[in-house]
Image (cartoon, rainbow, N blue to C red; front, side, top):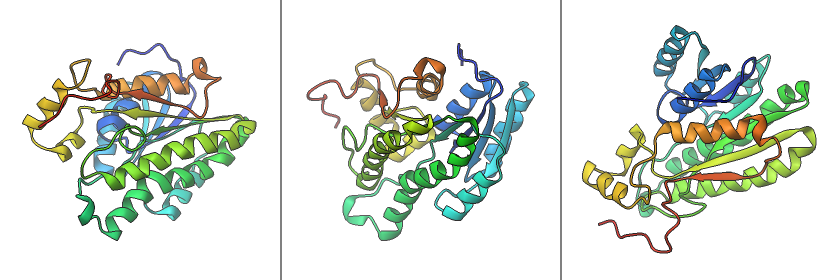
Length: 256
């Protein structure tokens, strides 16, 4: 992706970076000169991406981790010598009718999407303190904070919690030079779109988007790069909606 930002000499940790939005974020930071750590449950795809980036002359390393495991998060962060930017992008959201949500589904959704954000940020604090500043970015969603989608009550609740974390943690950590912001994607063309239904439904969703297209991972990566850059040095506790205008209409065209 084209970028005007320069992150040379900086280390960026991206969770869920092996595919979809995470891959777009990883590629964006790598193309901007950063050393990128790709933390993902799926180690082989993460390693493949790291090798691909290395072939382009970028610095990248794959790290396998289950973000529902608090101890694993602590171990990962403790093993780093430097961290400038933390991006929590990993998400868990099996499409599940409300009445079929089990304790296990809810627990893992909250653990990966929300609890991991607490443990990642806490673990990153000593690394940020060495520099006197730091940046935490989160992939939130319009689902939960802005709109609803059938079958995603558990996911919506976790993302509403993410936005609450962004505001409150940003206030508490601002005095330490740590900025915390997020991006709320709308419908983005990723493998995860398969969770929402067949191609006919995807076409109807696309037709209902004011800009007339699904978003691409690069659209989210661009917002992340901006929020991590010096151009956003006075921005904290905020989220940017990147949804092609989907949340603008008072009533959206019916998708049926």
